[in-house]
Image (cartoon, rainbow, N blue to C red; front, top):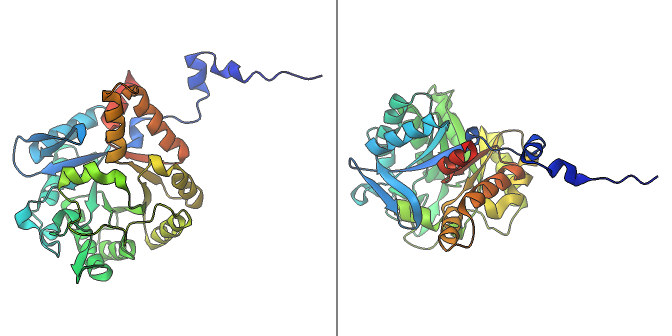
Length: 325
């Protein structure tokens, strides 16, 4: 005899829906990107990222303390280098008393348990705004990798828990791992931006750090958004070279890539819910076209459902407040 299957039974009440939910979000899922600038007592809203700020170090430390108090345990640091300290070799990136190094020390001193991740790339320090050294109009790979390895070492010496190379140069994960090992930093992790696409969704981020490329674009090192198999190849190479965590960037337009990567590797997978994705939701909400709170949780849940273990997102603090409401 035919038996009716009533799938709606498990959707009847909020408690039932929560009981059988396949995907859940917690504060442990989130990495908070922080933009840091020189000065003191400074907190400047980024025009293209409403309600998100670039802060001086003292204000950043207060923000980290606030994040820790609501259960967020990981931050990802980006610094804004002043123009007078930029050059083609990323010299300031290796300064032991540079803004990044001072920021790492200050945050670890204030909140020792916070996992401090650091951006490793040359674009904030480059007069050209590119992620590598420029020679005759070309972004050269191997000389850049050498600087990235030394930059990672400098961050580890300052106390970073995890370095996060975001440059997409070939071979940089192996070089960074070798440099860290040779200098005794065997507990410093590497979060590799393994599948970072040349995306239009990075625009607001570049406003935040004044790091847009001065010529051309980044398509000779960041990935073509038409490619899927290439992401798996890049990720597997990074894991082989010593990456502890891999990342897909952006997130919402690349959910298929997140799933492919999750199925291909056994290390944790992170995804970066990037500035353009943040700003689209903010803009639509301000126009009254969608409910911001619901859009935040639905978008983050979709990223985790696709396979991300960790999500770097500008909505982290908002999401935790919504989850605790």
